[in-house]
Image (tube, rainbow, N blue to C red):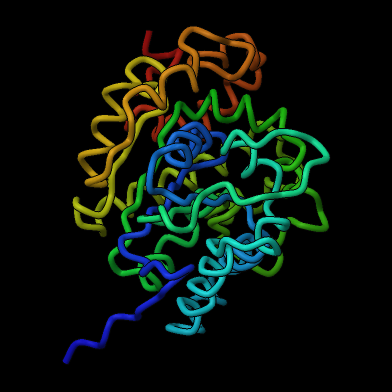
Length: 309
């Protein structure tokens, strides 16, 4: 006998087919989230404290989610519902990056709503590292639609190396390999990697995180029905944003304006982490380290290595 679906209502709107955007760090989730946030009918949030607190707890200690069972789904569902709430108090807690996605960048002004509650038809979230909570998300929202973004791991690592918040997870006080092993969040899967990790170069640690995340993405593709998972390549966001917007609109059965992605990821740029930026941003040693750690996954995803040329 099937269980009765959970009914969640936020600001008077029933939550149906919420959208979650997933990807490895610096894989291109942000431009896709920005486009969706600016599309009619969508209320997308990112980086809300309640969601981050729950998802990072599950990401860094997966046993918490597995031991809690349905309780984990309830906790995550409640966190998302709180994040999606539109009110003076809720909007005041919205992080700068979320407001920036909506085009609300005036400093010093009171935090007002980024969306009219009466016009919300769909809810979405693109908080960092949701990929590690994908199973719990689907338990919490069985009708959820997932969008995962894949990017050349060398470009992702180049951006990770310049992101202090991303590198902070490698600090001794935060790296939890002594209590969680294997460690999906850090991408450490075997005892050889575990023994080498403390002395490993930062580029190696970043490559492990990217590799672990894309392996999760690959497993997700095998487990989730096609109508609930769309994979988008970052490189396509750059080269063919209108086609990506059309594919996204068809998948979500919702209007994502074809112009909304154009210009969000300027083609041919290198200063902002464009396609192929790793050629200038990674040293030869770093490149060799990344390709050694993640070469199999890079090839599987269609990215050519230096040794392939």
